[in-house]
Length: 446
Image (cartoon, rainbow, N blue to C red; front, side, top):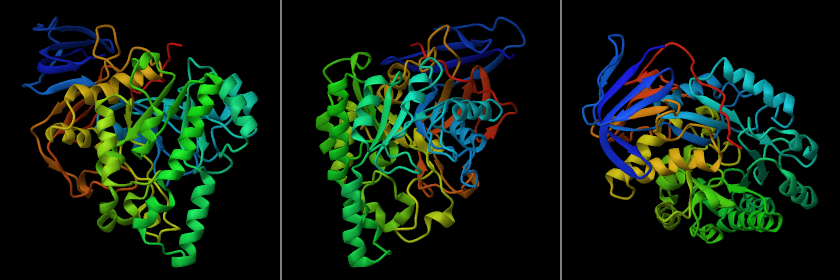
């Protein structure tokens, strides 16, 4: 296995930024120091030239569509795009076909990833109204979390039996991660708009159908149930300023029982973008107002929000170009997540240290990820080199998603990921991938 020495970089870790060198050996970070000399002639030296070195991003919410929906994405294509975007570890969701709602199906997905993943991987187990006994059997040391759809589910994954839901909250051996939108509110709003417009509802009304109230009703119920049962709850993809009142920043993340995340698209887009982007920015929960976007960004800075994720959920252009009621929700994001977040740094809205905290450190802390998410000696060498002065424009020729499009097409980012290491292997350098699939199954220190 190659040894690497990365020299003359600005290292970002644990709210510090310092200049130095980093030595990678046998898949781990061997040494971090002001100046390191190569120990042998076979060590490959990478000159950092003042670029920034950060831990690999841990994305706690992706949909790589395998099995069953592989015309949209696969573990191979999704993880390849992820490492191009500086994501070295990911948690994939259970709403595939078949769904990941039994131990057998969960282990089948792990076997698929072992043979196909560029990045480190784990999978969330899916809850239903009738699989509580299976949930209790899941090993918390080898599985990321339990995913519950409290709205906007696929298949039979909507958990709407209140008694079952309380039992799951009481007995889950895993962190409970929830999609929160109130199904009845959405159904009533949709019926009202169909009466007015038929099936071709104007896309700008999406946040009126999947409304602030639908989000708040569901999130507040989940938080109340977690408080009642003392469950460990993580609320996915907050999209409204109103929901922020449900969360706290009075204790460190490691001591929080109830946490929340925001996704890049809810920080980047708002309702004004529907006119230009149309159904290409149709997500669940919906992109909402400029005020919501502004307040979500503030909440990242003041630690009401703990994690930034992508909710990478690709569909083909043919699917997305349908009218409102037929176009599926979701879009591809992993390749462009870190460059997009770095734009907030260039705009003076987020520090580099805060970006690393929310995308690298905090997912590791929140989910008890073992030896990843930090630049520390003895940790796995999942690291990313970033040039913040190397503009590039997203276009069809440099998109790696299987679906072949991005909501960021035409956007010029000031920063680019130049190198990505996964378990000490250089897997990506300046739009070029290297042979070998080096992702490992993530372990959890629980």
